[in-house]
Structure formats: C-alpha cells, structure tokens
Length: 129
Image (cartoon, rainbow, N blue to C red; front, side, top):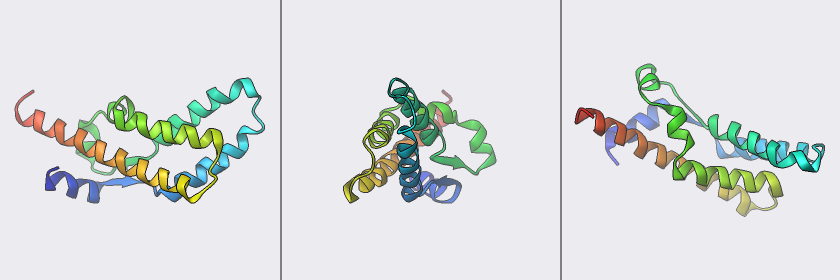
C-alpha cells in the first residue's frame, strides 16, 4: 500500500466508529421483533445495505467525484465480507464482546479493501487506462 493512499485515507476519509455501528445493529435488531417473520430477511438486507453505504465518506472534493464509491463499496469481496458480518449480527443480535470485536475487524478489512481499490484506480489512471 502506498504511503500517499494511507495519508489520503487518514486525512480525507471518515469512517464510522465501530461502536456506532454496534449501536445501530443493537437498535435495529430490537426493531426486528416488531417485523413479521416473513419480512425480516428483507428488512435485514435493507439495513445491512444502509450501514454499508454509510460506513464512510470522502471529504476530498475531487477524489469524491473521481471514484465510483458505489462500486467501491458494493460488489467487492471486502464489501461482501462486511455485509455478512453485519447481516449475521442483525439477525442473531450482539451477544458478546467477540461480536463487537467482529464489527471492528470487519470495518478494518473494509477500510483496507477500499484503500486497495483507490490505489488501483490511481495506478490505472497513471497508465492512461
């Protein structure tokens, strides 16, 4: 990973704190009790997608427009991994410190995956692709 990309992420990418994500998961898990059983899976999918889409924002005005953030956050392995963790915890609830740790680890893997994605886009741009 290039130092430039690391510095950019430290300076211009804001990621939600895993504790805030845990709070959302707990709140949404409680709400699932009021959702009819046959609608729960769809509700979990929607909430998972919302959490994933809101996990970070780019503050840099130029990079914000240059990167397809929907693609970056959407169909990659790191995004699917993040979704799996969130979906599982939404469904079963947060029951231990290990579950909280899973959220932090998933956020970090997501962050590293996004960093690689951005770095690949920069390198392709330099080669004229």
